[in-house]
Image (cartoon, rainbow, N blue to C red; front, side):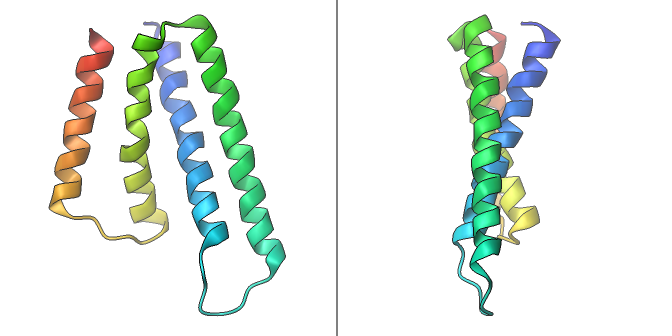
Length: 113
């Protein structure tokens, strides 16, 4: 697999995670009232990020074997856990860290075969 293809496969996962984070922020309840426009803006950014992910992914599917690029979808939970820890201040456990490590090893094994 070409290095640029690997870069795109990883890069598009960032857009997928960004979309999920924006959706979570748009749907969250806040202690203080907030304007609907703030929630709509978050929702719009989520839709935009997911759209970018979709079109990059479609381009990858067009040019590469699915069995070679699909393992990169496994990065989604890893990146999402890290993003939720950094951006949403969610708590991580040792089990989560072990799971992330196992997912990364699986991606490495599956994409290298």
